[in-house]
Length: 64
Ligand code: FES
Image (cartoon, rainbow, N blue to C red):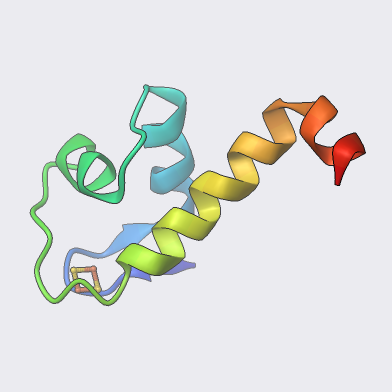
């Protein structure tokens, strides 16, 4: 699934960027060799980062 239409960044590339240490949507773009253009993807990238963070910290899931 394409997350950033302006730069054709796929969800898998977002996950790869997170695994490489990206912690902000702008860093995900930079990791993909792109700049933020319209910015409409930023919220979706933030949501993917939040989900990835929750998945990597099970104690947060348990705490609800
Ligand atoms: S959709 Fe990502 S910058 Fe436009």
